[in-house]
Length: 289
Image (cartoon, rainbow, N blue to C red; front, side, top):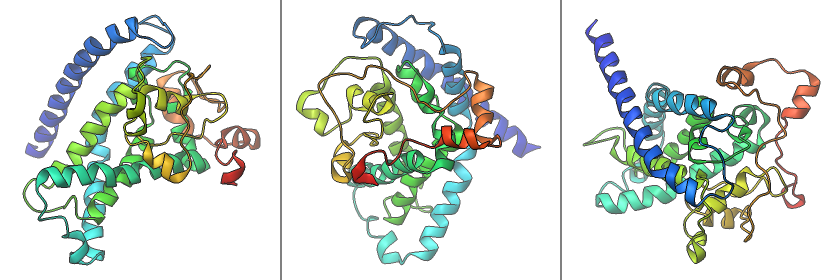
């Protein structure tokens, strides 16, 4: 009984924080997207209710979905790898561990994201995120929870493997929590409907233009997988950032418009026609074949 009450209190606190963050994000981005939009759009545009629903789903479920597998992975990695590897970063000051964690975690996030495009099973879930035909800050959380958890686990696994995060010791969740928080906040920015360009800094830090091209319905849709550091795409040959903006957003994969439909569709049995339609656009570039 006490355990159930404790979990309920945690969930209610998380729900309250979620509402506060929504108010802050709305206060910040709605005016900016009104005055500096790439494409003007109504606040209550088509699909806004679905995006809002996903915001609450993905703000309230990861605390339960991400915690147990993260703990298992952390313990497994530290049980398998020698202490010389997993403990190498323990003596670093917090700022150095955090800086290194942002880079190392980004490698995992990059490949988790890229695999979500290239593996048909993962694309079933990731296609939900690309179903948005208008990109704004709230599209950041339009994502199937299993898709979001998979990508985050790819980054967290590297943090535990390199010793930048540890399952034991003082504040064992501090580094992973900071990495996920910073990445999440920046992700709201790069999804925002903002025509801001960062000039030479776009080679260093992801911008709205960089990520909008990832959401394009046109050519070059399998580009720009990095969440924050574009040099990952430079390194792995997937960088694309012209001066123009995409002409259209979305995916050719059929995705329902409702929240319930998007949540359940990845689990539905596939016909032959469905399997062809749901095959991700990975490998379309000759150099990737």
